[in-house]
Length: 324
Image (cartoon, rainbow, N blue to C red):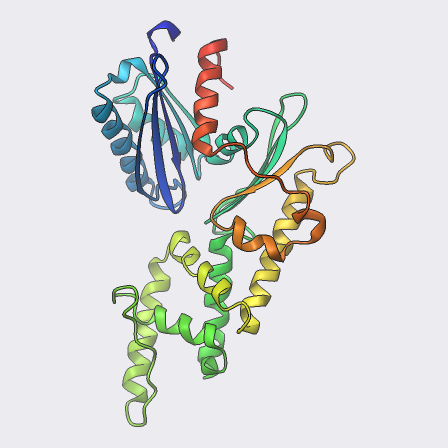
């Protein structure tokens, strides 16, 4: 790769909730940005690859720059899977000659510490911890995906809520807890617009018909629900934290796994205990009050975002003419 031909770095942060793009002109420092829907490779691979590709091309058009003069650095959820990462690489390479793809935990790591040693807990739709140590070694923990991993994440919390709600629904006990009642109501009215979802009405004489419709609606949702859709219930859990015993149990469980992930990544360990620790992601602010003082008091603000990290990686690649 001839670095002298590169005049732009195009950074992309593709996650389970949203996808952000930032195009930077290296000569003028001018930037262009765009946003689109989620594009995690762990969900719908083809749709995610298409969204990332379209976002990247749209930024080129807006800035009137050429792909051959652009280094594209993408941090993407699910990027730890080699085969899925290769699928994205092949799609982007059709238009962009110079492409580098990383798991979004890596770009977040370099962004949060601006390239300095740090431990990063990324808690959003999914969960992952990364560590950059004093030797420049990058280590990753968690981030195994929604099916068997992502403990403590928004999707994990949403799945716990739905499971609890269904158990109590079968027992006809959902009305005993406002959070569970609201959850079943939302699940049974997924086709309705947000904010216009009536609560279940178990009126005498209509129970059987309404119950059948509700059961079918819930079954249909479960059959196709993505991690992003499960994670959409996380704000509801925090909203009812003081009114629902299930909410506080789910939150405390998530906090437990976040603490465990921090320790796994080296927090307070003999070897890595002196590293700064950062928590980022859509769940980070809501969960902080429920973490132990030991961890919450140690957290510092991130110095930059995943997009900043992608830009940093791109600049380092151009500087040393290598791949991180």
